[in-house]
Amino acid sequence: MILQRSFYEKDTLIVAKELLGKLLVHQTEVGTLVGRIVETEAYLGSMDPAAHSYKGQTQRTRAMFGSSGHAYIYFTYGMYYCFNVVAGGKQNGEGVLIRAIEPLTGIEQMKQNRKTEKEKNLTNGPGKLVIAMGITKDLYGHDLTTPPLYLDEDLETKKEFKIVETTRIGISQAKDLAYRFYIKDNPWISRK
DNA sequence: TGAATGATCAGCT
DNA sequence: GCTGATCATTCAA
Image 1: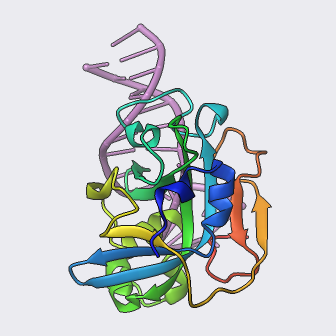
Image 2: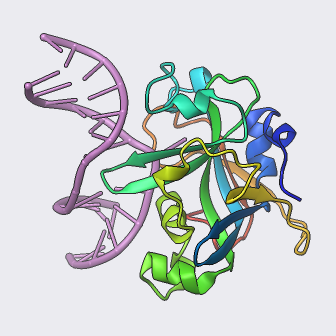
């Protein structure tokens, strides 16, 4: 069951929490890669000084101002891409950064993409999971309700888990806002 | 036209 | 814990 548009059109903070435990699926030429989302951060557009979209729409952030359920992918620190899901349903620049996933399918391919053998190190950070999943800037603005890249319900491992709410990582503005969410005691998160 | 600034990571110490 | 790598984007002039 691919997550539909309505899933993303709820309040962005709700979407950020509900994305935990969902599956990120990328169908590539070399096989299907799947990871379970274990860590997210919300960015609330004009409400949020730490958001790229805080000062209004620019060429770089235009996807964040499109309809919910699309991909906002950005290049940062001269080396890395990060992957976000547009959310909120208000088309005002809100989105959720996917910070860490748990590798489920295509782990060998992920190891090749990341050039490492250590599974714990494959996807425990926003820049890392983009490389492991084979996500590129070609998917900028992609509709995440359609293949080859989409989010899915996790039917098999419908476990109970507790959500930890805390402050975001790597920002200098609005450091005090608890807009970061992760699955308690999950070994695949980027940091405590 | 140019300078500052990152929603990061790996490798050291 | 600290630092260097490395460059697109943004904003000021």
